[in-house]
Each structure stands twice: as C-alpha cells, then as structure tokens.
Amino acid sequence: MQKRTHHRPHCQSGQALIETALMILVIFMVVFWIFELGWLMYTYSVMANAANEGVRYAIVRSGGDPAGTKTVVQNFASTSLHDLSAMSVSVTFPDAGSTVPPSRVQVTVTYTYVPALSQFMTSPPTMHSYAEGRMVAQ
Image (cartoon, rainbow, N blue to C red; front, side, top):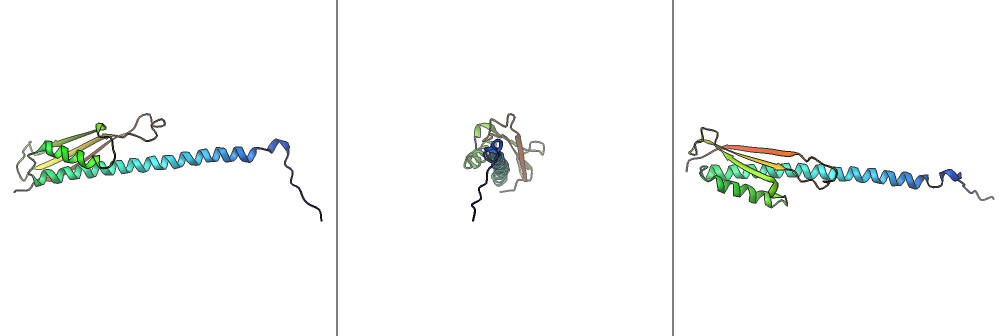
C-alpha cells in the first residue's frame, strides 16, 4: 500500500493562514459592534428610566422641588456606571408653569453617549428622553 502525500503548490503555502487572520479580524469587529450597540441600547434604557424616576419623585411631592428631582435622576443614572458629566436634566411644568396639583410635570434627560470604541465612533449620538406625569394632591 502506498502512502499518499498531499503537496500544495508553492504559491498556496500560507493562504489558509491569511484567510483565517482576515476573517478573525472581521468576526471581532462584528462582535465588538454588537457589544457597542447593546451598550447604546442599555444607556438609552437607563436614561428613560431615570426620567421616569424623576417624574415619580415630582408627582408624589407635588412638583415643588425641581432640584430634588434632578438629584433623584442623577442618583438613579449614577448606579449604572455612566459618565454623569455628559448628562443634563430639565424639570418643567407644561401647564403655564404651575407647580400645584393637578398640573403636569415633565422631566427631560439629555445624554451625549460615551462609546467604548471611541476611535471608531467620531460623532457619538445625543440621546433625549423625557417622561411626563400629573401631580397628585397631598
């Protein structure tokens, strides 16, 4: 019985290695962008929930404490490992500025996203989230 030997032509000796290296590069880029997109969606969810927490705080306390509402929103967002220096909070009263029940209160959170892959995302998106509720009488 003869032993078969498989000989490649000399011009194809490193082809598999180069193809593997190029595909690993593509696969890692896709994985990292999926991670970045997931972090982006998580960040938006945190900002929306922070606005909801601010509205809850304001409607229970009849909206008379905008500084306290901002503090509640910032404290909620700080538990999620986000950079709070890129976040701004606005508390407004759409019903002619009235802070007495049953007026509405609106909390707006604006956040400039800080990407993990900042080398590839030169202009990160700015997220806007708001929540609105009606104050209750105490």
